View 1 (cartoon, rainbow, N blue to C red):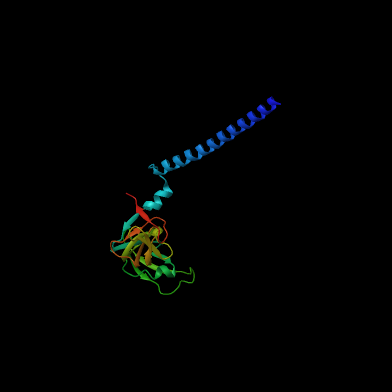
View 2: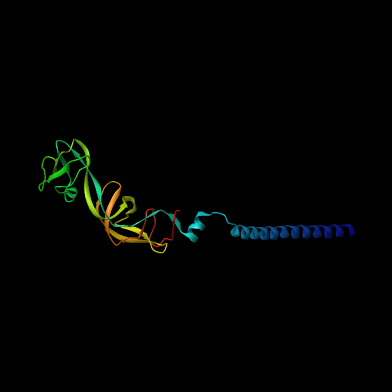
Length: 201
């Protein structure tokens, strides 16, 4: 009887020790993880998400400066004649220079029924794809920097949308006017209004 009692007593004692050991191990593991997380959060480790929240998303930009320059408008010339759309016709007029030499001498006011386009007559231009050099006084920005009729500029390192009007553009560059001023930094990267930014060095 005494032996059974001692064995039950020892079994309870062993179980208590085992439970205590498991409990202490779990508490120790949680404390260890808490300490490690605290240490990791203080370490200078590059984290793109955390870095963009703190310092802003890295972007590229250009400084806006109003200029008198030209946009290249491509036309295909054959026998000193080219065909353009109605929207393009509004940008063209006699006297405009053409790359490689030559000049626009006439832009028709009426539609050519055979082609459904407007005829542009040139002088001194060889056959092939040429560029009419269209003068424009405005801000020259990459086409990809324009989003739904607006560009984003930096306002104390926060992206702000400003509406613009595209005067003329080619495949790469647009000459624009509107709510931008000399010295504004036009953001070239994809951003949203109110987004915190920083610039590539």
